[in-house]
Image (cartoon, rainbow over all chains, first blue to last red; front, side, top):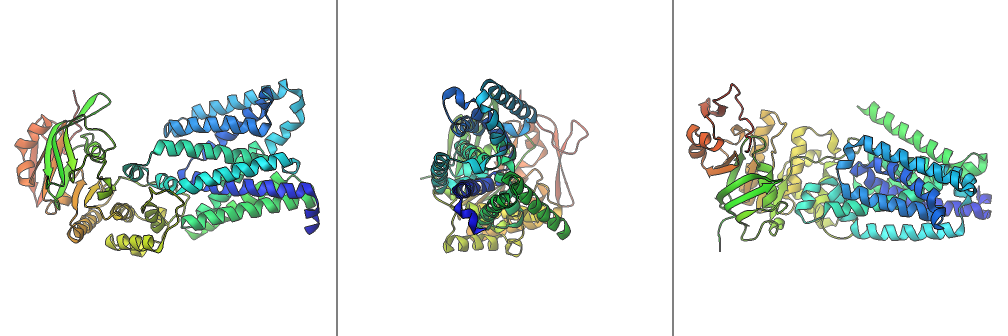
Length: 266
Length: 266
């Protein structure tokens, strides 16, 4: 196992993967508490349009995805609760986003090979530049959370009280959705846009099911995410099967185990 | 200096083009237990939100502890109608109460020993210590209401605004919650505004009642306000007050219903 550390692409994968997993676990925990899982789906699909259209503006897929998803996130945060109800609207927007992405892929022939990478992740192909961007984004997001997490948690759990205490629910919402956009972008490098939900919501959802307090939930979420990503990368090295497969399957099994445990307890 | 806890003079609240309340005048002394009654849609929750400064009063002079609405919120404990966390999370009551303590500060939600002691105190006051470590979603309706009450008590409020604490509770638990709130009033000397849509659980506990209907409101003792003449004038229709078996029934004499109907504003 230690032999794999000799390979730079494995080290890079572990580094980028750990950062994405860590951020996804932390942000995902808030997503679960706020019950806005649909936002993760939405932002990943909308981000796909940004990733594929990035070449139009001489940007990398990561930069394109980041910009579009953060913009979409801010709009989602600003529109508040109304989004929850309009499943039809969400479905339509997601479809057109994917459709546009398909168009961009077709127009820019050079992207053909990258399509699979964007959709399913390519953690072993991550470049030094991407790692630096990932590190920077993680540091920025964690710094913002360092200042805002107390208010965010309060507003997430008891918005009426928080409003009475002077917190602006809508600004916190906008800020939070933009943070979700960043996490989704980083996570999609590891498992791809189609599987982002599992990496961002999986560890957090499992932790929220079993933990009774905020900090134990957060730490459990981070632990599950890191173990799963590291395990996925090593298993991919051993078996040559894609890491996305191992990561999502492990999380699914863990999820099943906690579900069954819960049902048996009732 | 105004000795009243709450002073409302000729106040009007206008929302979405409609007058929810017109020219309401009421003074509430410190330590009073006021029941706020009236049919659905009469503006009870709206009044509370306006007192908290979340909605503006369009006319009139309103002060709470000699300050404008919204400026005295640190002295007010607000118990909204619900707290909803997703069914899948196992956060316990203790964490949910802890989140509220100084939740509007910057930083991370790390809690000092002092915070934990404050949380213990309100859990004791609301007699919820026995199930504070149980996942909130597994608690009964009555138990959940007590946790909401505990959240409101954290700031050692001089005024408690309770929005339908008895909703969805059976009569036995209603009685126990009212008694609990009465005990808290005696222990802390807080002024209590208690919204209810049934007057009976509050009989014998209230000092006075603020009855709201048809855009107006009247404050006074139960004997003075809850009478056929006064309520008929308030509702602008024939209302009948029946006293039987120590209970009060407010009946709409113009239809067959035994419940006050929602009044339509012109």
